[in-house]
Length: 139
Ligand code: UDP
Image (tube, rainbow, N blue to C red; front, side, top):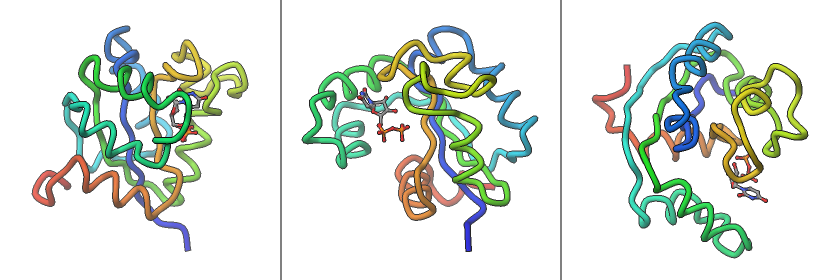
């Protein structure tokens, strides 16, 4: 059975470009409830750990550099079928391939600087949420 929570980050490009409000508005208008949220900045060690699965990929260095260059908004979201529905809402990794109206189509500049993260499984949603939030920060 699909779980009801996912984890997201509004990435440094989205924060720098002033898109926090518009993106959160689209997320909540799409039926997601914010369970936890904060403005935070990842260290190099944080980003390397968070994206460990990609450490052999050619873009890993750039990804770590990008994700640590400024603050992000980290959040846990709740909705029925949260992981899959949120991936649909954000659109394809590459904004050129993302469907019209999706968050990446509207706010992402490139496959690397793509505005928003969404967990790809229930298991990773739980791991990623716990990476950023203590139990008393979840509501
Ligand atoms: N990424 C990149 N170049 C690529 C593929 C991915 O810089 O060719 C970055 C991009 O920021 C992406 C993240 O690495 O969001 C994680 O990649 P993944 O394939 O897991 O995509 P996602 O699940 O974020 O859509």
